[in-house]
Image 1 (tube, rainbow, N blue to C red):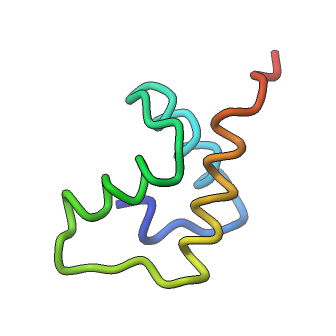
Image 2 (cartoon, rainbow, N blue to C red):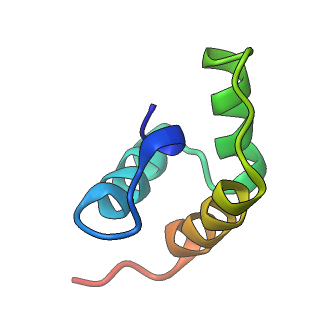
Length: 65
């Protein structure tokens, strides 16, 4: 649900990155498939898709201690 309603500020993105790592979702396609699976009637807007792709890059970035 956070993938459809996250804000670009605050802790939402950090939460998504942490949850995605725990679930093994490492690509934007993985994240978008999650949305399609649980919300088949919803579609991510183009702007949200770009933000999800940015989040996927953060998921794959080296962890900061």
